[in-house]
Image 1: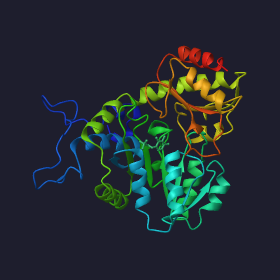
Image 2 (image 1 turned 180 degrees about the vertical axis):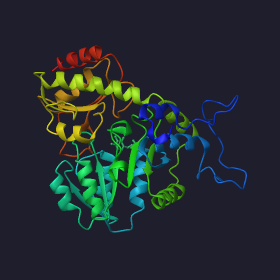
Image 3 (image 1 turned 30 degrees about the horizontal axis):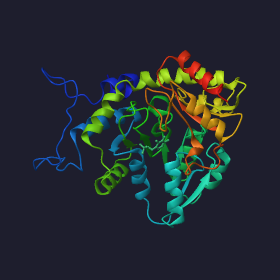
Image 4 (image 1 turned 60 degrees about the horizontal axis):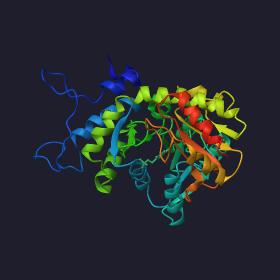
Length: 370
Ligand SMILES: *Cc1c(COP(=O)(O)O)cnc(C)c1O
């Protein structure tokens, strides 16, 4: 079977295995070495590693482009921005992952880049902002407001204007959308989240179909030095084996919880693109295969009440991050770096693979604490 015809569920299980031969190991080794005997393509531990290659092969098949592993999602994002000449114009979402937002704001303030911030769910605003831009940085759905950008339309408009496009695919994951197939130049994933899935490793990836761009990104990794450890790459690949089934289960539960929250008397608003009443549901449905396992909701009340809810759960952990087997929630504005467009009472919930009725009981009793 042609690798590209396989489904993501199958790729997650089969990709990055050693060649089949008698007594071959089913899994790649954890290659613990900082250097290699001269004469081969790897040469040095900052340039390559057998364990990274196995993980990268799996991501390449899932995203449909050649991939590079980095020491974190932010390391991967930094490699993309560092590739741009000083003074380059970047158009980016005005609310998205707070680390990316802070990095872009700092780059703008220092004069390293000129950044235009737009609301990515407003297609006309994005199209109006991009003339003269070198790179359009998209995130969809966005963290933490779950805004959906019209990726097929925006990417094709940017590409016809010869603008580079990169998409942060962390929330959707390659199970639900493939930005490279829509024409994006680069897709980025925080492998820390759903791809590795067990909250035990930090890693990031970049994928591209463009060989010349791949070489430039690889040079950024070599010289920037933000390389993953072999242990982390092995853990990420180990976690990836169950990636599809984890995301499917989390998404089913997220939809059920979003439905129940949206009629709960203590909840003011729910954001989840899979919810039929979500303002961006139709758009999301037109190009996403599924809607992911993260949702956000605003409670009736302010910061104090939202903190109380997060502190009152017994099953859901009060912690930052997302994409693990265990459900996590937090009030996003507890972080000073979070965008002021995010409401004070907004709670982001990453839905894990626990029993959905037990999750709901926990949510209801936490809501009853206010
Ligand atoms: C977590 C996250 C990142 C950053 O990834 P790290 O692995 O934490 O560096 C980037 N984008 C999104 C959408 C994220 O959720």
